Length: 306
Image (cartoon, rainbow, N blue to C red; front, side):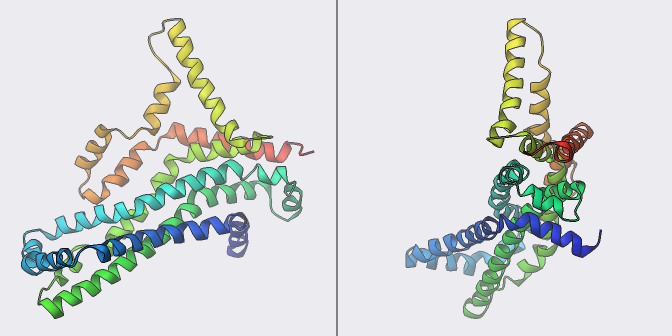
C-alpha cells in the first residue's frame, strides 16, 4: 500500500465529516482561548493589579520553593486538563462516526460506487477503523496543541512584561515545565486509549453494518437486553453471581484503586495516565474487537444491499 493510496483512503472517509471535524475543533479552541481572556478583561482594575502585585512580590520566591520536577508535573496536569474537553468531544464524534460509517453507504446505495473502485473491502474496513479510532481524536488533539501554543505565546508575552515593567524574572519557569516532553506524553496516551476502546469501535461498526434502520439502537439494545436479562435470571433463580455485568464493569471502569496503583508505580507522575490506560487493555478485549471487525468485513462482502 503506497502513501498516495493511503492518503486517498483516509480523505475519502473524512470527506462526509469535514465540516464537523473542522468547525468543532475550531469552536473548542476559540472558547478555550477566549473565555480566560474575557474573564481577565472583565475583572476589576484592582483585581488585575492584585494579580500583577502577587507575581511581583512572590513570583521568584514561588519558583525557588519548587523543584523543577514538581513544576514539570504541575505543567503536565494543567496541560492534561486543557486536552480533556477536546478528547471528550472527539469521543462523541467517534461514536457518531462508527455508528453511521457502514450504515449510510448502504442507505444511499453509494456502496456500489465505492465498491466499483479498485479498493478491496478489507482496505475500506481498515480505513474506516483507522479514521475513527486514530485520525479523528488526532484532529482534536492537534486543535488542543494549537490552543496550548497560543497560551504559551501569551505566557511568554506576560513573562516579558513582568521582566521589563516589574523586574520579575520568570524565565526559569519555562526551563522547568518540560513543554515538549509533557506534550509528547499527552500524545502518547492516545495509543493505549485507542486499543482500550477498540471493542466499542468495532462493535459500533458491526452494528452499523447490521442495521437496516436506527444503527444506534442496534448498537445499544442488544447490550442492554443482555445485561437486563442476566439481572432478571440471577434474581429469579437466586444465583450467587453475575457473568457479563462484572466483565463490562471491570473492563470500562477506572477505579480509584487502579489510579492509585498506577500513580504509585509510575516513576514519573506524568506517566500515570498512560499506565492507567495500559492497565485497561486486555487480550480478551482485543480478540473480541478482532471478531467484531471480521464480522463487519464478512457482512460487507457477502450481504445483499437490494
